[in-house]
Image 1 (cartoon, rainbow, N blue to C red):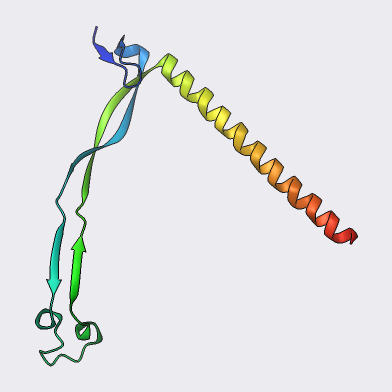
Image 2 (tube, rainbow, N blue to C red):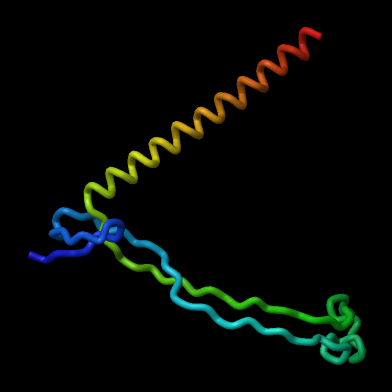
Length: 115
């Protein structure tokens, strides 16, 4: 039987007891660049009448790019249950915040209506 490692807790489980997932991980970066865009490279001295060619010179900075790749990982049952509980708690907290928000709006509207 094949054993795989859980992505969350790091324990080994038989592959029949885990669930496969695809996650996106950072795989690398390209370096940034800086360049001076002078009058000659902007096209305004070349006689072009296009609007975007008549911009002046300046300093251009390119910050680079981050590359990502998809990786297949495995998550065990207890970790899946913990994730489900955390999502349920987050949903309950969000619902409570919205209830408080709308009750404040309602009470404020009633107070303004009574004035």
